[in-house]
Image (cartoon, rainbow, N blue to C red):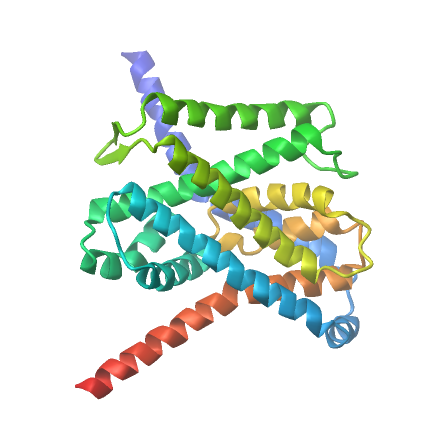
Length: 318
């Protein structure tokens, strides 16, 4: 009995500590940003912005559009897995809005589901189907992440001064992530189509072809997002894409795990810290700000404008 009570107490303490996790990450990010921004000059930041190449912004905008097309594949795959059908136009517009909101607000399973609910329920999907789609989307992201980070850590040379990981530990972590991916494929091969109950949610195990598409979409989504930031980095940066990609993956994972909405401050501070030795800090700050605007805030602005115009259209029709 005391042993059971102690386990329950540990569980309560862990749950309570998780509530403070975002604040701890935010304080850590503020410390990193303060350390990186301490020596910056505002006039040089303005001058750096004025000298930025428009062509790089155009490429970043094009990649962002392609990224959201890839994200629509998440929802299309989830709807197909639920054995339902919806017009792709409805999937594209709904997924765009859902991911634009969840990228900023965070907690994608909940915020994304609330955005999807109205359109998808009108198309014949139940709340259970929408919850399963959101769960599959989250799993797709982490599968792509695990495969990419596993491959890069196991096979690629590490960037210098890599925090958190040594050259000895990195390949083992990469092998562990790849083992997780193989384990998921084995589960999909062994129990394809069977139902698993996660508390009140019943989840059907994906087939092998669905699992393959999950890996493809997850890897493509994360790689394109990294390319957007890499495109915005100064041309003089002393860093090839693969070592940059490792740093980006580590920063992005910590940003998501921090539970801070959109990883705001956490992702930015970590990227500034990781990349500080490779380029001028003024140019890095401008690149990260532009990345935030183009990949995070611009899609949300488009979504809000579209919702506003749709609301005005409905009022005029009355």
